[in-house]
Length: 157
Image 1: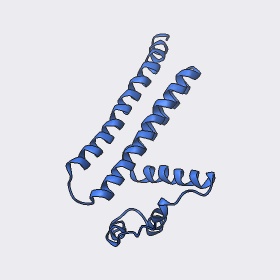
Image 2: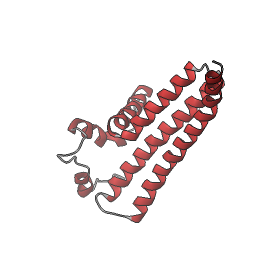
Image 3: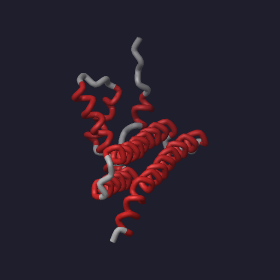
Image 4: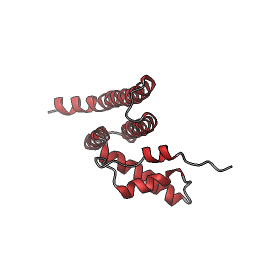
């Protein structure tokens, strides 16, 4: 059974003149439904998603900077391997949820277009809330791991 793509749907995914996505990038995304032919192609698609988020999502860039800062401070304070692993995992979780948030927002926008729908708002707000909670948890974890070392460092002199 062959499914014919509805012309109105095809027209709705055409990039407009103000779009940040280039035409060549758009052409690649039209083929996004295809299955990756190799592990290398899978990694290429994953890297394209991370690159897209980095270039288009301000919060993703902020989380990258904050995660790098947390790892750098942990290394300078000579945190244990387990403590560094916890910082890396929590930072990675925030970035992962930010990518999922971007994906959910894109799918919702594709579905509802420029119209308002209460369920679309709920989906987008909940996805953003997941990122917010993970970011708060990450800050709390970082504080719990770094604060004792900083206190010792500050009062040792």
